[in-house]
Image (tube, rainbow, N blue to C red; front, side):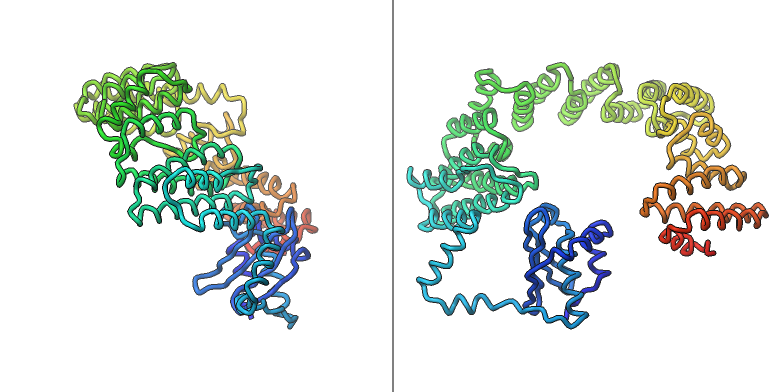
Length: 540
């Protein structure tokens, strides 16, 4: 008997996937049970193989659909689980899965070979794994033969779809395992050469794989790690390594991602110098973004702050936050402050990191007037709750009333220019943050705001003006029930309860009853909504 329930399936899948899984129950076939794991196939967009295994910690599952590949309990797993539960509850015999190990042990070697080859003919992914195992069966060693074997192992002849990407990632993992074996046997030079060749070969295949789930990227990162380890042991020529690394960073596909920092020790002083000469000499063709990134990474790795400032200061968009951080980190605080002021004066919304640095520095130096000026400029150019709070925090208490009036006047002008009154309103958000019930009600009524803000405004208003809050809640109930979207019914019922409670608080019990009766009558065919009304105490 299974050690899980329907409630467990809902818990692991979530309501949405569970309800979708109910619709796939009729698509389940080939259900077997081996005493611990339920297996079966579910026909959807494709035929998916599904497994469910209850454990002491909950549930383990596996399905080869894209949703499950990302770690989610999918609708196919729900469908299989429901079918097995039904069969168990109705005494339907579920076939036990055969003991495959015992069966295979009973076969002769020739029969096993024919069985495996037949399976390989039916499953291209399985065939590829077999071919790779055969390719690497003798282990790797140095030389052109080994390089050719690695290249063949990683070669892709046809586009690898999303569902097969994990299999190709397994191929990369196998290559990594062989390279680790070389390192363990003390053949560091061979491991370094082959890992470098494998990275180059893999980079050339990147456009042939749909790696949306990141399986190949993860395996590629491990390949880089083993190459860095091999470099540390083999100590290859630094200048040659620098040329290879920079060439692949510029001309490669980006898979795997190659950064300078992990290779810095292996490159050594001469290698880093050679890398820098090629990178800064401009003797290669790369996009502006790539060149800027590589130069900034080189400056960080070598600790060249002046170079980093020059790189961040080039192009149409100066990276002020990076410049400020670099100068501050190098102990050049005054220069960092100068650049922060430059960044603040740039057109558009100021970078919050630049503003934060400026305000911290000015506060630390006791430059109060400049601090307030910076806070006001940041708020004026980006009038939002965060900049308003910061302005309030750094304005002396005795001067806040005047500054607040100026700030609210700016927000009112901005609110008056809004063309979408049902969108969030910054003025309303600021007044909600301050808890000023009268002002925020007036602002929301005049300028409008979104539903979430209206609910918070009404919650404040109902303390002193319950009837006004009813005027907000009641239309929302109707709006949430009208589309017949059952997911909105719980919210609608909670709002209806609040309307009833407010009527009763006003001493208008008859109107409360009429409101509830009207809802139940108008929506009498919507049984789920009526059930929600019952749940919150608005029964008939």
